Image (cartoon, rainbow, N blue to C red; front, side, top):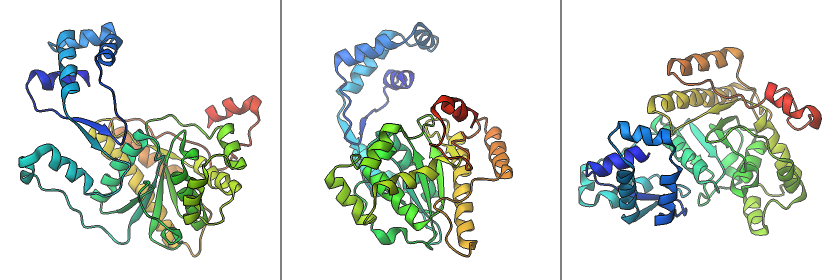
Length: 336
């Protein structure tokens, strides 16, 4: 990133600084100096091979710090928001751009669940929403300002769910209310892992959910709007199946080709789950069965072709995620 920023500054390219959500990065002189000091000798050698020295990097960073800041609220709803940000950035040149529009398929709806308190997960969810819309899916997400009700998750709708698994998801009221609603409606679920290594909910998180201390009273009122009468154990029982199916890797920070291939695998799994639900004679358990060995092989071949890594496996469907003894827990999870 330092190379890209410095190259743009040296070549006098127009630049702008963007904050994600309400996160304000303090680009003070001391902060920037600490960033410069953090570069290793190997990093500095890379700069020099590209004709960039430490002074140029610092000057470029100082320039970025002097720019007006634009805030992009990715945790807000509305697909017109990016266009509004572009309009603000480009000013009089905005008319040269034509915002993208997609004809959505009414038979394909995907609901994306993520930790709304985590800026990285908000960013990933935003990218997934965009890619699904490009593929003509109607997308809904658990953003904080999206109005949802009990009817949003009625079983029988053409609705599949993507859950972004992350460390603190169990403590996000907006994420957990939708997870509980999805479990009640027995909707098909695909899990995705991004920006984090796989981890199961901690004992502390589970105890907080069981004891009712995970959410504030105001948060619980919002939860009950969607899942009235929900119990503490219902949250735990809704979480468990999510850690018993394949978690597909999605890395939008990688090159675009690999990102598109990873998304293709996720979309195929979502479409398959949706088709399986449509063909089923009645509602199934909260989470549809995991991929067959043939499906996994196919996905592996696709990602291998793109030069990527195999999708990570979160857990096996035939094991209880929290039933392992403490003595062998780590070894057993490593085997999985």
